[in-house]
Image (tube, rainbow, N blue to C red; front, side):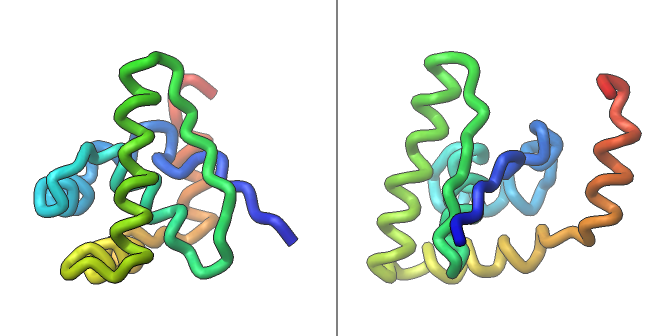
Length: 106
């Protein structure tokens, strides 16, 4: 079964999370790329949609592929940082949908 991840950055809300920002600074990568790489680094190997709408966003998002390669090669610090981020940012599904439903654009 294939899994498609549509909202890996939670419609941009995730980019304001200081835990993501801190990890991005540590990895010297854009926060959006770190979020996408963490989503791609799941053991079930999902297809992750970036949601980029500009060339600049697409270029920044593409850094996720480099991070994923560093993760898969076991580069010191990268695997640990992404694994920790996946745990720290995990959100209960009901809470996610309640928060998303409350957004003003809904």
